[in-house]
Image (cartoon, rainbow, N blue to C red; front, side, top):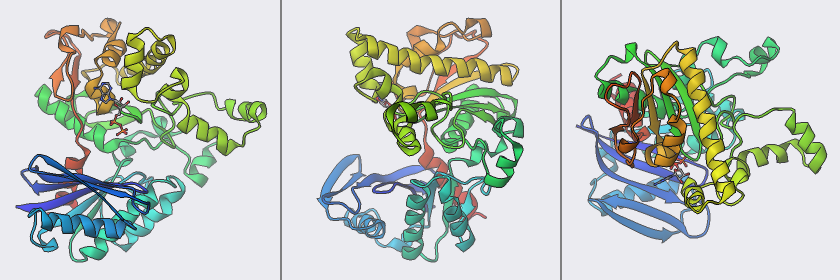
Length: 397
Ligand code: ADP
């Protein structure tokens, strides 16, 4: 039996989950927020009970030390030596990491070298890794990349129609993100469908604040909606998704903004927020749409319509389809979005049963029993994937 910790660290926060492996039992989980700011917040769930404290948390290293102290305080462990390894979500692995990696100096340097591609995320992820390395120098630490699962895409999917040298010289291509989630639901779908993953053509819809769709054939990602950055693809909470790039100089001229400011609007003021004019949170949009607020109804239509079109496109790319999977905050919870996305897909063998759609956060089939294409809600679990990879790449390797 091993104790493995999975970490997802951002610039001022990190989430943790401590697993018992290989049983995959969650021993404890929690969240540290406002690192380096006033009034840091430490939250932890112990035996199903949530505890929250406000304290000063100057740095990631101190946040991790504090978390380990709290583990002792709550009798979760007696000493840090009981933790057998740590796993870390890293947003960008570029082409360097087609799979997870046991951390050594070269891996650290490589993650650092990719910061140009993910300036907000990779440095924060690396901070967490280095802090764990210092605190647990003799234990394995494994980096798990959001991009890895999509490294199986063929060149025809990942290449932009730009001069080819830009790919060679600058690494400009589609990378794709949310890979750990797409991979988790892919394997879970194969289990639920009772079929070998090698035989399946799936479309996995990860719909959270960030959203991406993947075409998964034989267990491998062959296309995905996010691109060089997580701005591309479908409409998201605050991100545009795909649009005509000629809009950038046009908007710069009209508004007097710089390119950076325009991209900031595409990232932070667009999507559901931009179209609705009041919120990026789908729950708020649904509530207003219930009251027939036209902008809320429009935001819902725009959001669902983009996903709907990707389904048609990816079914074509795979020459057919066996199942559509919904996951993440919206995919797991929003019957409204699922119903809109699935409307009018009978022509391609998707017979969706509205009566089964009233489900939140649990695994469920949404199709009529004889529907040639199945539809399944599968709550994602990126943390357990990270813990599994610590076992595979760090402990059993
Ligand atoms: P993140 O990308 O930040 O991890 P999540 O996967 O948590 O995002 O998804 C957040 C989205 O899920 C929000 O738009 C939120 O409104 C939506 N959501 C969460 N619960 C529900 C619900 N019960 N009904 C509809 N939407 C929901």
